[in-house]
Amino acid sequence: MPGLSVPTMDSTRRLRHMAAHAAIRDFDGDNMRDYTELYIDGAWREPLDGAVADLTDPATGEVSGRVALGGEADVDLAVAAANRAFPSFSRTTRQERIDLLERIADEYERRAEDMAQAVTAELGCPLSLSRAMHVAAGLIQFRAAAQVLKTFSFTEDRGTTHIRKEAIGVAALITPWNFPALQPAGKTASALAAGCTVVLKPAQLAAARRSETRLPRTPTSPSCPSPARVRPRSR
Image (cartoon, rainbow, N blue to C red; front, side, top):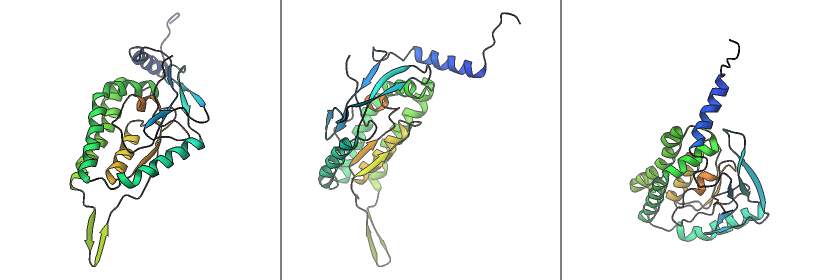
């Protein structure tokens, strides 16, 4: 009909995502978010090479923030820190690692809504999906790792052979953009349960999700060629 514009499926989907973002895009009180530090050796620090990349809101195509990119020197610092922490952490008791995983899960659950909003801002998915799938799936990883660790057998006998399972060393974890809660949580939880220290390299386009949760101090040293855990800087 003349004068009548019928939205296409793509435009309808885009409008739906934009509507979902309208309520959450400014959930920190600022439309532009800066994540300019890496978490290495128990402290937040500027990346040594100072590189910064833009974060784009998938629902609008607009730049919604900036993220620090770690370089080779930052990786070296993170690996060195994780190596230093490994001897002591690998000797922690089963119960100490269970307690650590449960504290992480408790803090994760406390900040679940913040994380869901950050996931939506990064992926462009509906907020309901971020809450029910992405954030929930990440929480399960820490809860499940703690539960499995309670009864996991680190030794077994096979015939005349005695097998002892031990932490192997620093775990280098690389995770994708499309599951920014599930993948980092699953890999990190498993490594910590085994007694390994961690260097985490998440996708640089999914930086806010990690910044929304302040976890208890852990033997992890997230840093990488892309951002690890990063936090916003007030502007």
